[in-house]
Length: 84
Image 1 (cartoon, rainbow, N blue to C red):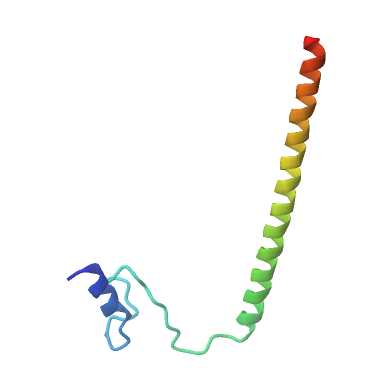
Image 2: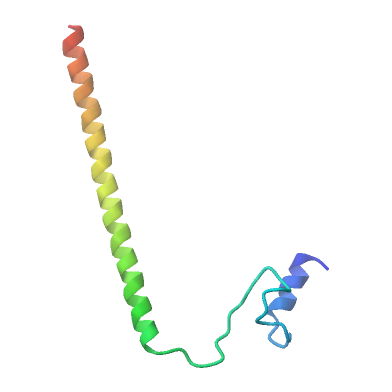
């Protein structure tokens, strides 16, 4: 049986081993009970915090790149003065 067919079998909800990870490479989780509604609030806050941190990281990386470029320019100017 090919992996594709095996994966289709493992995604079949009528399969008795649907939630078992032994039969296929894909594990699809299904909650038997309703999840605590507070978790959706917490998860959304965590996702927002991750986005904020990624944005801050990007800004700082741009700042670091600009500083390194300016340092390179200063080094070149100093080297020109030393050579002359």
